[in-house]
Amino acid sequence: MANNCQLCNEIFSSRKKLVIHERIRHRNNKIIPHRYLLTQPPLEQIIFYQDAFIVLIKKRLGFNRHSIGTKQVSINAFPENIFVYLFENEPSFRYSPVQQKYSCSFQGEAGEQRLKQLVNYDYWNVRQDPKLKTKGYVLFIDNDSSYEVTFSWSQSELKENDPVAQTNAPNPPQLHEVDLNKNSNNIRSFQRHYRFILPRVPFQQINH
Image (cartoon, rainbow, N blue to C red; front, side, top):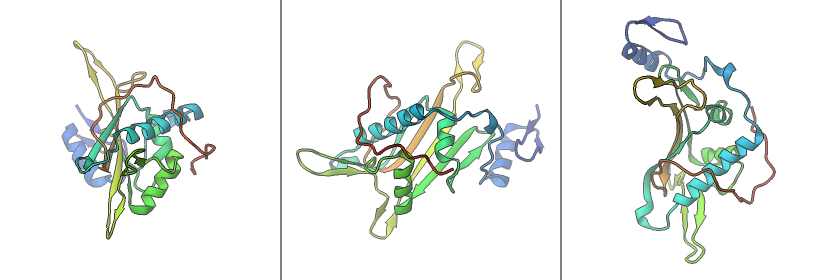
């Protein structure tokens, strides 16, 4: 079965060849062929997932040397339109049509400041132990070195019996991953049934 590149319409005999072509020819692609299908998320939904991300990170920040290292945090069922809304205008934003995967990276002090704007909270990456006054944090810069935080989103398929739940079905299984450089542990899912209470400034529209 032929595989068409959605970006240049070139046809390949296998998906593997299409993947290779996309990596070489369109590795910095920002075009989302189905962008018109992604609706503007409501404000309440944006704030919910911003807060979910902040709470999840803070819960995983540690206060001892065993917490140090590159970590990954996952949020299941993170809506595609919110990921696109938050990151599509960032310089490092990329989309792979054949893999149905987005990525966006932030590095150094500039990346840290930009993420504060995107999640609308200045202290999303810092947590202080109330007793010992020590801090756990996501590290972006250290002496002469800078570190990177990478966000990625990809669709998954749910295989149950024989038919496969297609990823374009309503509410498909989805994964949002955040690769962190300091202080957090792996997490596979989170509960949505709690109320977030954060000292937030009034919501600021992201510059699009």
